[in-house]
Length: 531
Ligand code: NOJ
Ligand code: CA
Image (cartoon, rainbow, N blue to C red; front, side):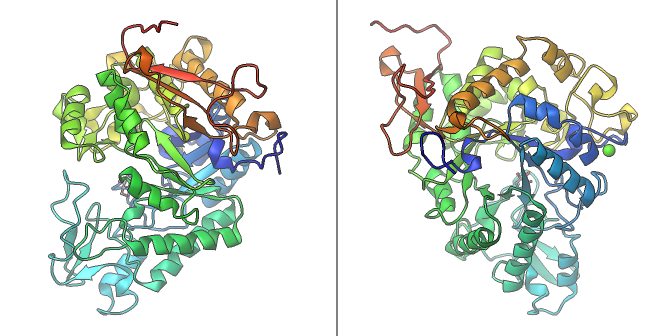
């Protein structure tokens, strides 16, 4: 298939807008206080009208929920709180009918300690295939080069299992033992999980914690070459069976390391750009474009079919791993004065509170999100400027129920308010009775309607797949930084669309296809430029 210009259609993820949500946080269909697939189904019109083209669902599988579902106890089921597998299939079909793609989580690095594989492993004979589903050791002194990621919660990457009489390896919580990718049976089992979900029709898989699949003595045990070898195997497995699907790497790494997850176009289709995210906040706070320019300059070119996933916030803390110590101190001071706002190596706040609920700053960062080179990922609730609650523990403060209306429980659930999986936001400035979809739908000047216009503008000029979308709307895909407007001072940055194989940079006015030159000023004071 080609566009009217005769260019091949870009893959769907290149001009997508992704909306990240948690099923349990979005809409409760059966009034038990927990969001579910039947509830989510009723909201598809909302997300489609917002202008997003793909939904990314956080883990919804059977789980003890000690890490909000990233601790999986059954890879091919649906947690009873959220519905059944047939509810999921129904949701998927309905999403597709509305032209929305669906991305789910492939949490392949680890399982819950309640997963039958781990229970079997700890009872199995040392050296057996079953035992070797996980990484065991007689001593906690192996792989000492590996950092501790959940440093506020775990003292070591090893924990003692009294049943096995051995230590097991875990990069995250102790209740999340790492799978052993050296074991071919594990690799096969993971490919079966992939086949299961892609076989149902899922469009994309986010590969959780992908840098940590393999360990290697004397190294930080991240980005190990064997991990890339497995990803190539995974990609060719997917390509051979499921056309038009997408693999998205969650690799919280420096640009050159993150880019290795694209391989030569034979590993992941997409990867999150982690280092860019904190630099957007740094730029806005210092009123200087340099942090953005620098990180883009450090970002290597990537294979044509690949794409960065860009984000401002997500379900985790605003991670400050990919900044210098000095920048981290500055960002903590600027955005997380209170100790409660800090967790691990990051800040547990939503977008609007981080930016002092300053509408112009919220618009600026969203405009950058939609004009920098990559696919924007929007975190649910940020399109209406939802608040957070730093007192809820871990990262729950940014995972509270979606606020739909001024009704009982913000329209999220008909349950008793005390039954909700997490309390609603009651902070005065962000109270759920004031910040909600219904009020913002009515007001043409609301953030929600501004976001809709922004996404519509992006879709109109830069493509964006929708069922029945006019072909000319897709002719240009992807964006690229097209230079910095130095003359006006250090605060500006301009971005424009990229045309493959043609002239670089934005087309001049009146040259035909739609073209937008986005100029962002990081400055708080007006800038002018002499002609
Ligand atoms: C990354 C996920 O984004 C995070 O929420 C989770 O806690 C860790 N992986 C461990 O699974
Ligand atoms: Ca429910």
